[in-house]
Length: 123
Image 1 (tube, one colour):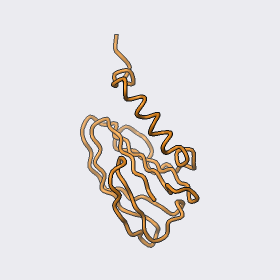
Image 2 (tube, helix red, strand yellow):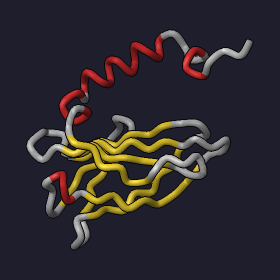
Image 3 (cartoon, helix red, strand yellow):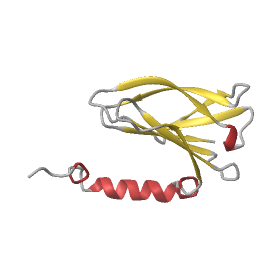
Image 4 (tube, one colour):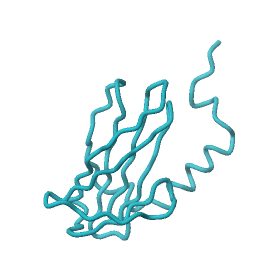
């Protein structure tokens, strides 16, 4: 009998994601914008936005493929309330500063491992 995908994770994985959810609860319970529909043929991603919170946005990027994907994506930040600059941190790491384009977007170079997920906090 095949074991479901979610059961093959380490036991500490569930606790890790619960702690992550609690840390980012305000933005995760805010509005969501689907940026690329999940079709199983490429990365898919969506953006949580909250212009009144400390975390203005949280971008989630998923790779359903069996190989690593590296891709540049345009992230619209209009609904985050940011107008000139954004600080973006990948998976809780050190934040990089970006200048927004005239259409309130930034360009992110994203690399996601096979079957993996990356998340970016935008302030």
